[in-house]
Image 1 (cartoon, rainbow, N blue to C red):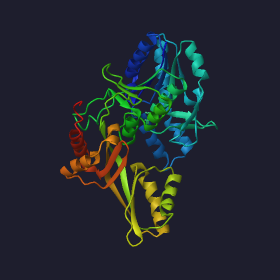
Image 2 (cartoon, rainbow, N blue to C red):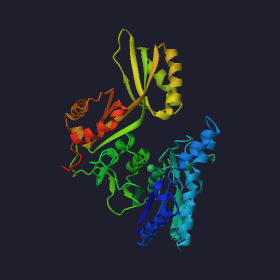
Image 3 (cartoon, helix red, strand yellow):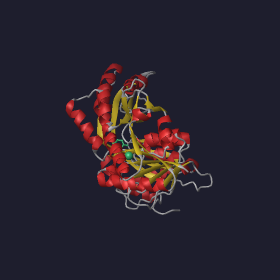
Image 4 (cartoon, rainbow, N blue to C red):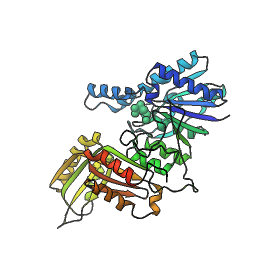
Length: 406
Ligand code: ASP
Ligand code: MG
């Protein structure tokens, strides 16, 4: 008997018929003799709707109440699924984060799971009950409800799989796996049968929406095999797993893009020790994630500092940066909100030369200007003008021959 965690995303539970379809999938796994723990998202669009309400209610809603509010979408889906399963003659029970006890830190909107109590779930599993856990939510040590960041139910599922030492974690979504790039942008995109944790993590961090980055981090840390599958077809699927030493190391496995980027430049900053710390500390104190950073070579004691943040953080970031710019004696702050980040990812690039050059040449051939570059061992990212996103994705997908399996 295996213990299987199955997570279903928002489009899979968008209405009662779809919830009934999910129930059938769960029953199939249960009938095959497995123990099942299900994790659900809210109905598609519901979390956005709740966030909209909160912002209608106040410009900057109280964070404690905000998290409590936006976690309610999952309460609806888990209870409905339990009702459906019970009516079909299967014993099923829903659990909210605090009922399991999924303990988190106190960082509202982006809480991290610190501990999962498994006693309550294990007791019910032993009785043959199907367990249905609300994704995306937890509770801090003072009993405040917290949420794990957008897309956080993936992380709930992987964390539960790790805590319960599950044999498998299946993430059901509306696509049938992880692709070489977004099939909506490039019709030559190819589904990958397998991808390493490291590559998946880079893909998720650079814009692939299929898994929340934290869920991949967690899967890697606890060695949880994750299958990305479609709720609507039995075909396909991608296994996210440890890098297979015998596996041919693809130079490039995928091309990703992220349109959710804005570029901020602080012009004419005095070039002396402590300035970067002065600029970035107040941002991190406000939990604003700074992605790419470049500092130009210094000219007569002054330099320009450019970095990117997520669009949603622009207003806050700009306010903070304008005040620090004044404090450190910089000339001005410039914002470009028409940029995108385009990345290529592959474990093989660590041992191949010329990959970056090929990327830059490909973009140049299309007349796409590169504004910023950052690299890691298995990733190269460029900031470009947003209007060239699709063009760049298609050109890079072709240039690295991703359509065909080599
Ligand atoms: N419902 C949450 C969201 O929309 C969590 C999730 O779907 O994973 O972000
Ligand atoms: Mg998701």
